[in-house]
Image 1 (cartoon, rainbow, N blue to C red):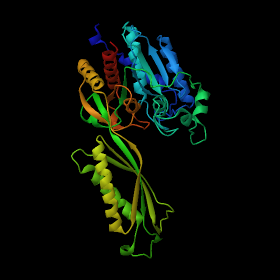
Image 2 (cartoon, rainbow, N blue to C red; image 1 turned 90 degrees about the horizontal axis):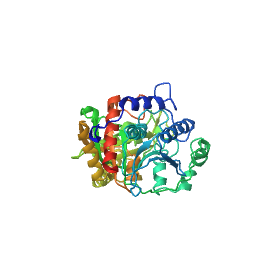
Image 3 (cartoon, one colour; image 1 turned 90 degrees about the vertical axis):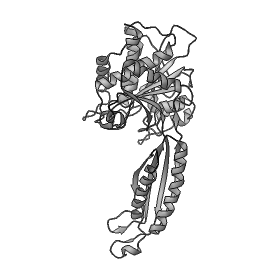
Amino acid sequence: MTLDTLRTDADRLWATLSETARFGATGRGGLARLALGPADGQVRDWLVAEATALGCTVQVDPIGNIFATRAGSDPGRAPVACGSHLDTQPTGGRFDGILGVLAGLEVLRTLARHDVATAAPITLINWTNEEGSRFAPGLIGSSVHLGLLDLETALALHDGDGATMGGCLAEIGYAGSAPLGPWDFDSYFELHIEQGPVLEAGGLTIGVVTGAQGMRWYDIAVKGAGGHAGTVPMALRHDAMVAAADLVGRIRTLATARNRPAVATVGRIEIPGASRNTIPASALLTLDVRHPEAETLDAIEAGLAEVASQVGEAHGVRVEFGRVSNSPPVAFDPTCVGAVRTAALRCGYRHADIVSGAGHDACAVAGFLPTGMIFVPCKDGVSHQEHEDMTREDAAAGADVLLHAVLARAG
């Protein structure tokens, strides 16, 4: 067997995905493996034991990130890293993030099984609290490691029950002492399910991720006038809910009426003091807007101001909005993107370039070192749900591409 024909073990990877799904399993076939809870501690212990059995050196930093390194033949070379996260949503699936970590482990197993030596070391990473479902925000592990978030601030964060990150790290035994980074890695690769329907709809096996969309969040307040539902004529109302409904439709038009459509989501609408026989006096909305180009996000924001004015005038209300977060678009390193594309070609998998619609640890890492991502399909594009699913073949294909992308950098 030559390196070109080297492949991961599809059955072993699938068995590993199934085996580790017992940590935090739900009755509906999903996972409830919240960051730094008992199930997260158990799967971490399992990962450390497996990596140690392969001869890896395992280190843990103060925010609980796990780094398992397979030695290279050239001590002067910086490690090539790969990984993702093992934590899930409260009722999440078995593949989001998890595939990236376990496929990275499968890469290490494959190299060990076939006695493949690499010049550069290879490091498998499990990032802490990517999801942000227990401790907000998301990407805490990678952000702290990279210096984007202060360690003490992160350790003081608490969940809905008042438990702190620092306390939970100590409780499960992952308050490590390895220095924070950013470490001197050569590059970083992350395999992930797409979490959308594009690859499956196109009959594609591999998404070569060129970057990630920018994302802006807004809070919107529509302020009208309340009243009795039976006594105020329709023509004389200043109904905040009617105005909010009009606003939602106009936002959709604003996002789609461009050459490269954006995605815009009003994820929550709240009517303070809501009652079935009261005209809503106010409505509070959240808005999530995403696009790969910052210029388009700027244009949509300007358009949002115009739409707010138009809705206010049409319904006799006042519409106020404010941006609450801004994540700029991310472009991945061309050489790493090329390594992923070449690996897909070498393995014979149907592939296409794709932009990530979601945020990932790779998006944070990309600001510090050459980074690439690999997407594989998930059934019906479903993610963050217990019925999240994928095929054994697609999991193996992603692992194969990860293997060859890593080898291209590790030598």
